[in-house]
Amino acid sequence: MRQIDFAFSVQGADHIKKENSAKNDGKNLMYPCQDRSFSGIFETLEMDMEKEILLNLRNGESESFILPSQKKLSVSLKKHSVPFKIICVSDGHGSPQYFRSGRGAELAISSLIELVSANVEKFNECYKTNDFSTIEKGLSVGISNNRWIEKIAADFVINPVTEAEYSRLKEEDEDCEKKYRDEEKSLRSSKNLSDIESLKKFFLKSSLKEIYGCTLIAYIEFESFWYALQIGDGDLAISYDGSIYSKPIPEDENCIGNITTSLCGENSYQDFRFAHGENIPNIVLCSSDGMANSVRGEEGLFTLYKWYIERFYNAEFEKCKKCAESNPNEELKCNLDCRIKEAKKIIEKNLSESSKCGSGDDFSLAAIIRLNFDEYKKNCIKKNTYYRYWENIGNKGIEENCFEYLIKSADFENENANLYLGNLHLCEYEKKLQKHIHDAETQKIKIKAESYLQKAGKKGKDSLKKICFLYSDFIFNLDNKTFFDKNTFIKIIEDLKYFGETERIKRFYSKLKKQIIDISKLERLSSEQKDEFILCLNFFKNSEECKELFFALVKYLIRTEDDFLGIYEVFKNQIPKGIID
Image (cartoon, rainbow, N blue to C red; front, side, top):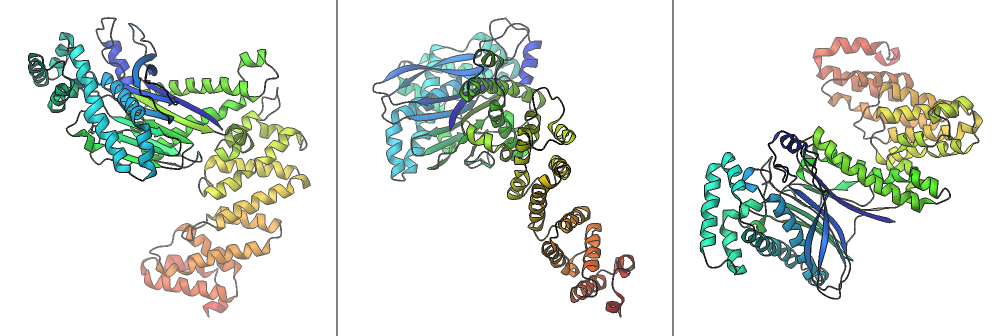
């Protein structure tokens, strides 16, 4: 199992456009990325220490300049005997009154790390006794009312608001600019600037904390449990198997559209939400709201998350040119290390592209991922990559699609053919998943597989039979309320006849009869239901089952007089005369 962690924040496409058209002084961005993100592992410490962590922060290329892609952030770590891991995203607010929200996001991240470092043993003991309230109070109050408010107060005292900052704010919100000036004047006229407790009390009540306003999402992993926290919008998702994702933190009904709770809100410690568990997930991702606002709903977000994970799975199919030339006999490790680096570059680049095509907002993504590359190699079909797999298993020098090559050459003994035959687990996978079976891409692959196996003759018959049975079993086990498509039904029956499976055929027709026997309860027959009725009547002709079907039809026609004649004309020639008499 290989562990991978990363965190990226990129400037939104809309901010880049504004930057390029702004009158910039060439020293500072006017519309920088206000998101911050972090991922890191903290081993045990035998003494307190100061440490610099790196935040991957990329502001887009403006016409004037490009800022560095990494930002250093100093944190004060306490001695601790329990290791922990953290991924987090803090989204600085974009409105004019939050003009230092990027700095507020940095201080939120450092507050979280320092708080966990100082309390990791305590949290560990509390979790053992199910004292979750102490952990959650320690995190919410400890960040919002203590460490974060203390850090922004100290930052404000050391770095007074500049005239340039006030001027820009005045252009957008003159009342807010006046309010900030008055409150800063009141603060600096007091004699408590060096008293941190007095400063904290002032900032907790003052609107000046809004200058640093931001949200925070974090996942903290200890040795035997995990905790997640959130204030404001954004998303955190976990997965244990890489295919099913969930969002463990409860939704906040106060986060609607562009409205969100925030660390700078009044009594913000009350707005924290939490989740926890003892089963450590293999995949954890958290992202700012710019990402969710660029896709369609939760399912769209999970699909995007899966796409990012796939970048690492794809790493094992290629060997970078440098490694191939210097170490031609090197096994997976060299290849994997290089491809993981490349996958991270692809993900970071995609964040910018997604912002451009989506919300235009800043994008942040942080993740801890544990991947079993060896297992993936054996079961790549089960990881939803079957349609890419075909492109990678052909012989070197063969540019044609592997399907076409194998069918054309009729070579059923080579290594590629064996790999291809192994991929027939596709149908079994889809049967278990119980979805996408009618997806156009899935059907296309199934048809090509059947074509290939039919050409293989006797060698392909067993595998062809397996496809037929798996597919028919899947269709048979669909919800009783789902009516079969006529063409699908006929194709399955034809395949089963070819293999002499009369019992399976009877099962299918019996299931179909049960589906339509309650036809008298339906409001109106669809064309598919009419087709199925005819198929059943033909199969059960001159039998008791046919009588049941006919009487069900009569009840339906009596109740739905509007379409009586039209429907009767459709069916009358299909019903045996003995039954009508």
